[in-house]
Picture 1 (spheres, rainbow, N blue to C red):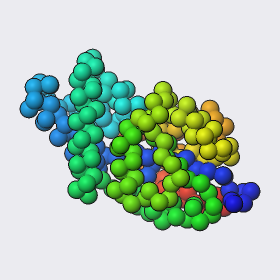
Picture 2 (tube, rainbow, N blue to C red; picture 1 turned 30 degrees about the vertical axis):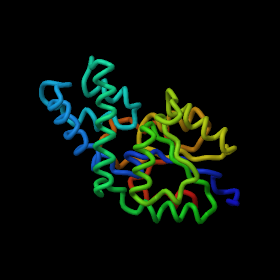
Picture 3 (cartoon, rainbow, N blue to C red; picture 1 turned 60 degrees about the vertical axis):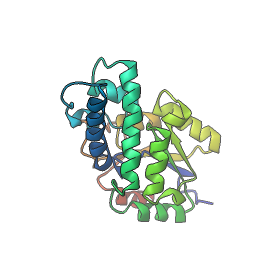
Length: 222
């Protein structure tokens, strides 16, 4: 059991918090557009990758609306499929990096008896494969993704997680406004991660704590 001073559980966002998403997203994005052009699903230049990176943390459909405003449902569905296909292929080849010190940080929290979860707006296979391929699955009790549970927001996903696992004294750790909102709406302590390069200014307004390196998280507990 965790002592009174520790939260019962810590819920982690994945991209921009534990995983350097751009190290996987960028090569998958360019490969996806090459394939779309090859098969005739899309003509024209590849939109700037910054549109994709600036949308990380949003639901996937919202990201594609940023990348290609006015894209048809058929094209969006094809982009979802191809992006995931290329991401999983790249992961199997060892592409993609965790932020420095993530496994040690998770191990330190688990040693304190804190229950650890992932709460991500990503697709189910993406979230599960990143965690597995990067060797951190042993630390988490369960992985929650908007893709698996079809939740309309991170706040709803977090509420579902809390209700299912009977936890109330939790921390939400993430890098986007959706993480802050999810934590505050559910009465959690919010730790804002201010080190991913793709967040907008003011993204973490309302967070109780700000960290500039994920390795600082265990220190906040003490």
